[in-house]
Length: 78
Image (tube, rainbow, N blue to C red; front, side):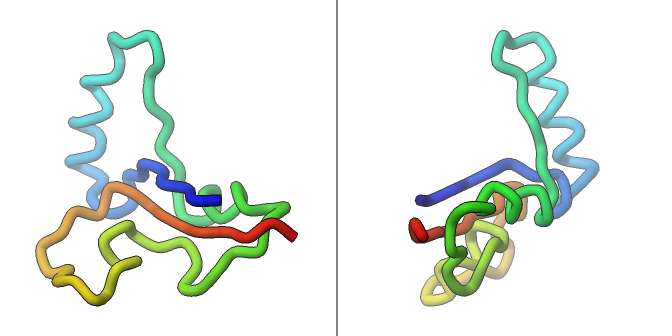
């Protein structure tokens, strides 16, 4: 299982501005912190390096200046 989830933890001020654009949509948006994102893997084995900002999951690519508005994690079915 692969999870990407929005978060405000990387840049709270910018995330609040962006979240306002979702206020008038039918779907809305839900931000989760790292702990809540990790909780989505409750019945899965979370693979290394765990839940982290999406750009940091690919350390073979430059991460300086990348956004920190999505958490990502990969899990394996138990």
